[in-house]
Length: 333
Image (cartoon, rainbow, N blue to C red; front, top):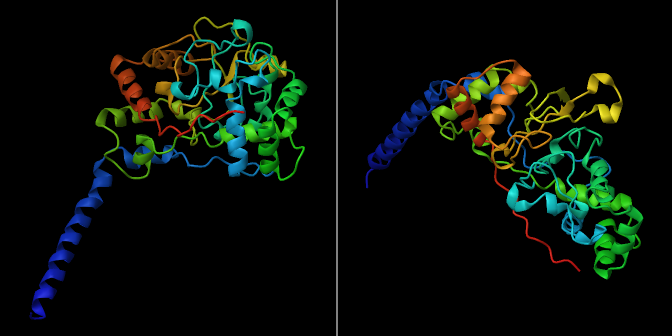
């Protein structure tokens, strides 16, 4: 074989690669949206930020998972965190307001725990600043699990499996404490993230991940000011904004601060997975996503979106559904 034959092959491959490169370069510009809008959003990282005093370990995560599904830390013995945060229902319950101990109906809609490690405030009224501070509240709440923490700790200590699991997670015996229960639950919840939605793929350069309508919806979402509050990787600023949703008399953050300026203010909910975490708003008063968009446009923006804009924004919001965490229900002692 002559030297010319392999050289011809190299030249042909170089020409092909060069042609592909030329074709790929204008693809970004020809999208018509990416350059103008992609920098207004952030893709969701796979791992949530970690606090300095609660490192993430397999042992803590596994223990936290057991506690999340453990109904015996409720006074009735039948309610667990997963009762309201059901993995099959977008890690929420899909009913307007949470139902807890003895069939009591709470004041507020159950927020999803998906991506909650990215929030700078927890609960609708922000009364907890992080997952560790949030974790024990539902156990004690009379309308939820209705269990005094001392009794919950006593129950956990009665199981040899939990004694061992806590010892493995915290490196010493006799570590079944309220603080460690909170840390384990928080560790597990920090793994419940949904990266790699179609929108994330688009932000990372896959311009075919969204349809033309979905890109129009992204543009309408940004141009109408929705990103003022729905920002950051979880599409929430974790701040509080006044909104009067249909049927709600909830005083919101006012109940935490006593500041009249916080009346009817609620934490901005994440829009990640919003298409599968209905119903919407603090009272779960709106079941349909298109109607929720209408309410937000009217109440927060002072506008009435036309039907096409609503359809486009709803199409965009559906692209925020990510890959659900693959969690096997644990075997409990």
